[in-house]
Length: 503
Image (cartoon, rainbow, N blue to C red; front, side, top):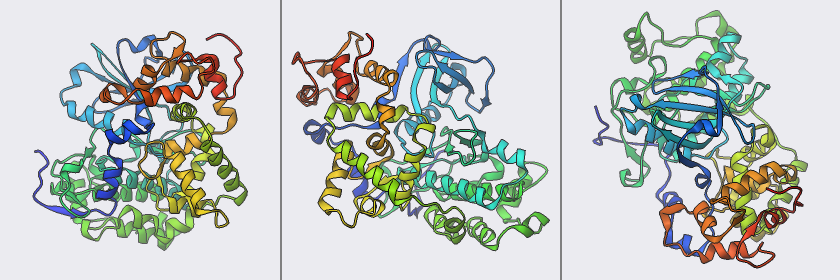
């Protein structure tokens, strides 16, 4: 059964029409500005993926559409997770389009990164961030259940990912512990949302009014985590919140709230709302935690929104963290430094930001989340001013910083832009990283970057009519010998790094 549009529902996290307009790629604006977007750095290649990656034979995960393999990039040694979708399983191209489109465009610390895609006669390959810490499902199973502090920290990150998805018109529709991964094995590791194969995207033409979006009817998901309205085949984004509530319940006690001998019995318990806190394990769990669950596992109209979940006392008090004023000053200095960077340097930093590991930007992520007070994945002017404790600063300087960092010109700072503008010097002066970055921009591998290559890197073939003068001007800032191109030596000088070896 296909999704229809008869009924509508208000969804608080849905992007406003004004925000949608800012998000649209304005060709006229692009012709007059040097625009940098994170998805420019996600490439598609036709050909043999095994030329570039050493892929292990045994899968580390399996799903309905394919298997996931651990792999190592030959050139850099970087670990990746490669999802292979065999040609014979590509029956429904829409699910693959859903996943690749979502991952290419989404930019959030709690959502898995997509680096590139490949396609050959055997299938399609999604090269993604490798999460060494494994699945939340296994993490819970190994411990039986989690402490309230740990559960709150994980739940908060889940909600942040959901808020961002909903704001960007994406409903995941298959939230479960198997689809949340830990970036590393370290305590307090970042949680990442994965697998957008069942997600549903809504575009501007599908809007129906103020804050409203289409209802969905397709019955998808996993039995224990499916909201009752999905079973009734009439639901909205709120189904994701229900699933997160089920996961929270499991994290605290170790078993699901709705059980049965088979799928039908689980569905029945789900529809009837039959769950309780009677087991002995709940005796040691706070009333606030139970209160939050009881306000999520309710009919759709009564259910808390993700933002309301984050404002709940249990989350605010249990998952609270603070950034020191000294750290904030360090990041203010980095943002000021980024203001003075050339356009080419900003593009290079943006590429590097899209490739850094979780370990390299752990503090940056904490800082981003600290400033992003409404947890929607974007830093506004007001949030930037408040987040940096900059009451003694000229508001115009804060605005200038935001405009400088906002390289995609959408009026706010997204995650990749924040990372690009606050990278530690040791990362963006890493020779091997810069060598890899140069090769990304040097499309024909002739040892220089010209205006056409820069245009292809930052605009692609989609916008052929954009004036190449914008890109030649960007190169001009760093073209020492004035030949209209930037070689590797000039590229390194742009990043204040000395040439150590020939590329």
